[in-house]
Structures are given as C-alpha cells and as structure tokens.
Length: 318
Image 1 (cartoon, one colour):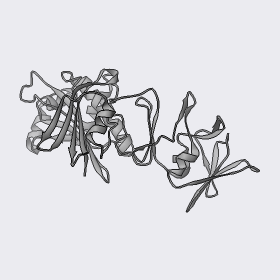
Image 2: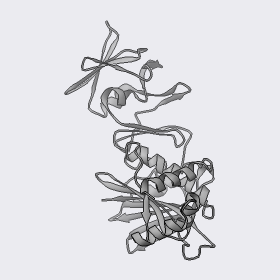
Image 3: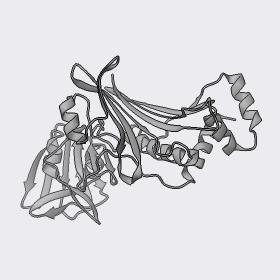
Image 4: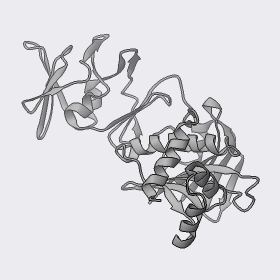
C-alpha cells in the first residue's frame, strides 16, 4: 500500500466521524488582530454578516505604506517604493501599479473612517491574511504563534504568561529542560481539555506544548480532532497543502507484513496500526524562527486493550 493511499484513508475515517471543535486557550467575544505575530491595538475590526472590515490606514501603515486621498476624484492612494494602490469606496476593483485587480468586496465607510474588507490587503498588496472565525483571530503578514492553540508568544516572561491565561498553574519550577509552567486539564471552549507546558530559558518563553486528551479512549473521535487541527495548521503554516504525517515505527519488512495481515480492511489496518504503536501520525512545519509539530499516538500501545490516544502540538523556538 502506498503511503499516500494510507494517509488518504486515515483522513477519510477522521472526517466521517463528525466535527470536533478546534482548541482555544481563551476565545473572547471580540476579534483580535495580529500583524506579523504582534497584537495590534490600532486595528479594531468591524465584523458583521457582510464580513470583516479593517481601517485601511493603520493596517497598511504597519507594512510601510503612506496613505493619501484625492478629493476631486474621490480616490484613495496607498504607496510605498515599487507599488501604488488606488481604490474608491464602493468599488469592487482597485488599481495596482496601473493594473486592475478584482476585489472580493468593496471598501466602505464606517463612522467617517474608510474600512477595507479582510482580503483587500492580500488581493492588492499580496499581504498574507488568515482569519479564524471560531477563535476570533485575524492575522496579517507572518503568522507567529497567534493561532487558536496558543495566545502566548516567544519571549514572554512567566508573569506575562500567567496574566494572559488567568488560571493558577498546576505545577511550576526548574526542570532539566528549563523553568517549566504547567496547566493540567485546562478547561477549553467546546468541551475540549488541554494539558499545557510552557518552558522558559533565561526568563523568556522558548517552547510550548499542548496535549489533547479529551477523546483518549475513542479512536474515531480522537482522529477526527487531529484531522481538524492539522487542517488548520496546514492552512496557517503550509499554504493549505496537507503536510505528510504517516510515521511507521517498524522496519519495512514488518510494515509490509502488518499491511498484508489487514489487507482488504483499511479501517481495521489504521485502527490496529495506531493502537499497537506500529504507526503514529506526525507532521512538522518549519518556519524561519521556530518549528511546529503535531503528533497523534497511542500512549498505551503495549496494553492494546486499554488504548490512550493523545494529540500533542509543540511550538519550539530555534
């Protein structure tokens, strides 16, 4: 069986067993905006049934653009070396260096301020944007740990982390890997449960890990949650492409024997391979300053009658 076929079968099983909500440390009622991984207080979005809109001047200013308005033509102009964007409120097109670009939605005026739709920056200036509706997060530029799994960021102090999470740590202190702050069974929205570990070096946060154990005895539910979380990471860190995540824990001969034993029943193959520890799912996303790993396994592979499926997500600074 080819690796691609097995992975497709796994995801097919995961997707057909029902939806699992993504994980969030704290999903507030408002929508937070990050620019290159840094929260931006100047960008307060307007969110309504027609979409998400942001004030264009402070948004583009953070990417080096100057803004001007021609009252005679009623055109707004954004400029920086090498690029000039011209648009009008209410128009579904903009001009980028003289070329017409179609917009997903027109700019609008709210309370005397001009707002552009969420995709405007990407459509005109090629500035990446990710919107996580459920977590209430908008990210422009490089996504840097501003996602639904962590609101924390590298470089935080212990005091800043505690202020962010607002829950007393379950454990805290020096360990071999550094100063560690742990939260056991931290309640999460949508009924999920997370065990968080934050590691500090020199007083600054440089690694964080969350393990999901809410579906520990149910393979289908646990794999479905993994598939949903991995799909989110694929969009955020891999341009939407699915990162390979089949990891056999045996040599080629044993793998072939195992596959032969369960030939004709792909679902049972997947279930047994993961349950007995023959196979894990693991994907890695490598960014310039950090790595992201998502890992799904059965911790009790040596006690197959009592499986404990666990999904772990790790961010580590390089």
